[in-house]
Length: 74
Ligand SMILES: [Zn+2]
Image (cartoon, rainbow, N blue to C red; front, side, top):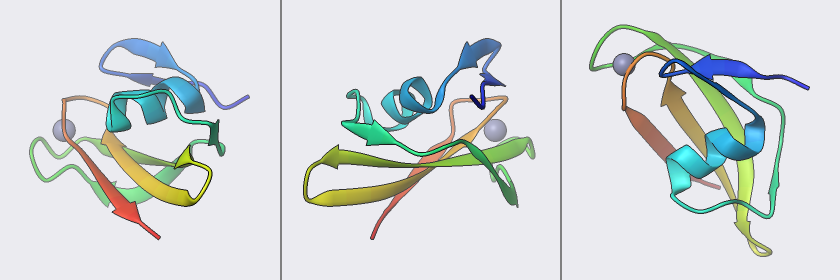
């Protein structure tokens, strides 16, 4: 398990992907450090890969301190 604290709340990779996507993913990979800073607040950014549907894979990025998030389709 790779739980992290995001916006003051403990998240798993599934709940982190849900915060980014707005829906619970079919599957999600482990949370990783994205090695970049949040453009809004300078906070630490973490990433998670997830499948919003059977044919799609998305890498999502989320700031641990504020609401900023971003996603990249692959
Ligand atoms: Zn931020």
